[in-house]
Length: 309
Image 1 (cartoon, one colour):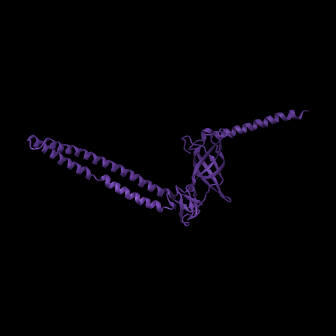
Image 2 (tube, one colour):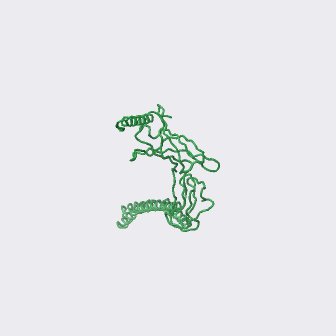
Image 3 (cartoon, helix red, strand yellow):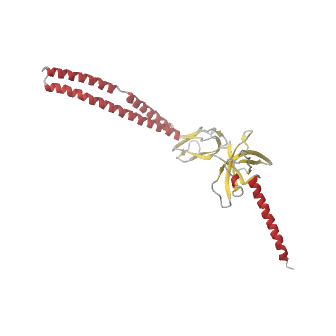
C-alpha cells in the first residue's frame, strides 16, 4: 500500500480548510471585524533640535533651561550675545525717525510755491511796465525768466520730497532688519513641549547652526504602525476610528480612542500601508503618562453606516 497515496487527499483537505479559514478572516475584516495595526509604536509629532541662528556667546539661564522642563511656544529660552544687535537697533531707529521727519517736511515745497507766486506777480508787473515803455525789454524778460525758474524750484522741491520718502522707506527696512537680527539671536521654543536635551553651555562661543536644545512635544503624540493594505482597503482611510492600548509600564495599560489622521499613499513591498493616529496624552502627578518609544496595540474599528463610529 502506498502511504503517500493515502496522505495526499488529507493534505489537500487541510490546505483547503486553511484557505477557507483565511478567506473567512479576510471576509470578516472587510465586513466589520477590527483590523490589527502591527508594530504599533508611540512617536512624537514634533521633535526638533533648535540651533543658534548667529555666531556669538551663548547666554542661557540653567534654571530655565533644565532637561525635563516644560516650555511654551514662543518662549525665549536662550540668547546669542545681543548687545551689539540692540545698539544697532537703537541707531537704526534714530535714523528712521530722522528720515521720517524729513519725509514729512514739506516746507521746501510750500516755500517754493510762495516764491513762485511772488515771482509771477513781479513778472506781470514788469510786463505792464514794459507795455508802458517804463521798463526795458531785457529787464522785463529777466523777471519772466525768474518766474519760470520758480516753477522748476517747485519741481525740485517735490523731487527732494520723493527722495526723502524713499529714504524713509529704506531706513524703515534697515530698522526691521535690525529687529530681525535680534530675533535671530533668540533661541525660542516653536511649540509647547519638554526640553529633552540641552547641548549648549552658558558663556560658550557658538556658531550659527550649533544645536542648543532638543524639544519634544509630549501633550499630543501619535501612534504609528503598519496595516495589511489589500484585505479591506476600503476601511483603511483617513478618519477611520481606531482603538489604542498603550503599555505604560509593569502590568498597566491605558486605552485611547482616536481616528486615523494619515494613511501612506505607498503600498510597501510587504503589502502594508503606514498609518498613524493622534492621541491626547494623560497627566499623572507631575509627568505625562505616555512617552515616545512605548509599545502600543492599535486596531481599526468598523464604521457605522453613516460613516461615524
